[in-house]
Image 1 (cartoon, one colour):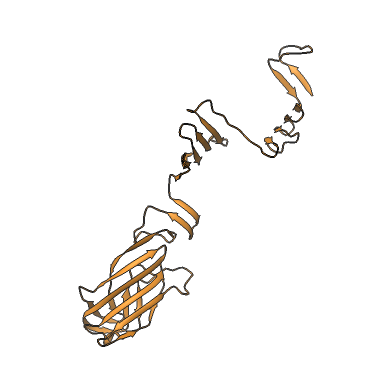
Image 2 (cartoon, one colour):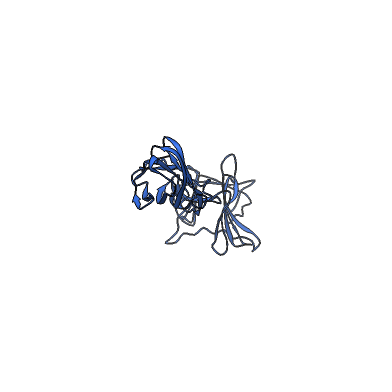
Length: 271
């Protein structure tokens, strides 16, 4: 190792204004070590494996001490284009952490009480199609398939429609159904009474408030029961729901439907 004093020579106990070290430098053993061949600095190690390698004992600490309680302690993460594209800031004024990513501040904040606030978008846990998305929207027409935390209930207009031709008109007092959904699971219930018919032909379709989902979990997608009152007694009727359709088809002869007949249904499906 060669040591040079800039601008002169030195004696036995020199005082340096500027010091130039040509080669590796070891201070007090391995307390501070510079590896000039790899441009690395080690603390408590003579073989630093990274640009700065701190080798502590059983507990290793890195301390950033601000000047006073009105300052901040900051760690910047940069590249050649931006020296602070990412950042962690501890504010000694509010005793809070804030995180910066992609050059946008306050992506996530932890306040002095331990509360976590996520800015610039929704809080999402998991991946698309499998997770929880805490969203501000929750109406039945705008909900997405990823919202497992969404809950809503309300009414919808029910229609009975012949599959081939003709019409079935419901009474004005009994033409509503109710829905409840949690996440993607929707349950619809209702009791409707036929007011009049006009030459209905085919089977009968019962409307749904939201189309049946088009995912891969087709097995067990539709469940529930449908009772058809034929004027004298309740009869359990079969039904079928097809993915992407906004109805279930009742296996009921539309030509036999008459005024005063009724349908009582409770159906659960994924949308």
